[in-house]
Length: 303
Picture 1 (tube, rainbow, N blue to C red):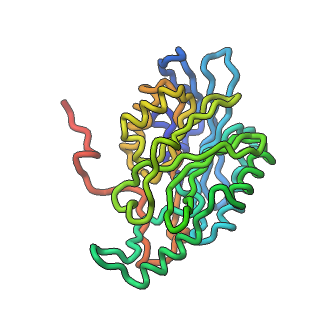
Picture 2: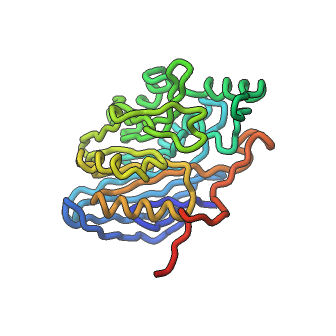
Picture 3: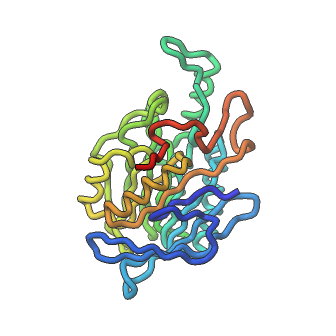
């Protein structure tokens, strides 16, 4: 029941022995070790790993969380986040990375009652509930997340749905281990029908934060398919490249491996692991973590 955690290559969260991966980058040889995975009862799921630039450099321990939102219940989602952060900290994590839209939810399968030129009353009500689950930045939920980071002495990178008036943004928030909110990144270009519910970001929120554990940045889901956005991250010297996502296809691993090699950086990708019980009942939602159809974007041809 473990989903895939891609960390500088095709390494899964179910791997139990330590795995070392060598890459060449601007900082020279880098090493990553994936240490035994720990699974919380009835829940996903941690991928624990250690990072060091070389054998003599300090080791940074990180946790990639692959848990589901408590849909339409933001206080309960924050309670769940704190429980997971506390557990990660108990294993010595210095950095904790959560998936895309963990706070607020990724509404996979929802139409929000939209067709061209029309929206249903039921769809409007559904969007009202989704809007109510989003958070203001800054706001009380951000303050609570900052308190968690400070309480458990971890750097925190977490996907949220940000509310700005009537507009929603898919965003990532950054916090330091002293409990300070560092800033945010808004998804520059929502993918496909995400544009029905999320506004566009821009390059003004594409930060890379210099911290004692390394330079930390993030790109959300299909932003990782944008070469110029990645280049902007590399130009800012990103060392710990976080990739919160909602993409569970096998091809995603190849993208993450490429970014690690291209950027000479450590890549931490977190995707939600969701069961049917985590979402509202059918037919409103149909959650499928993988695409079954084959298309030119997901086929590797010999040659």
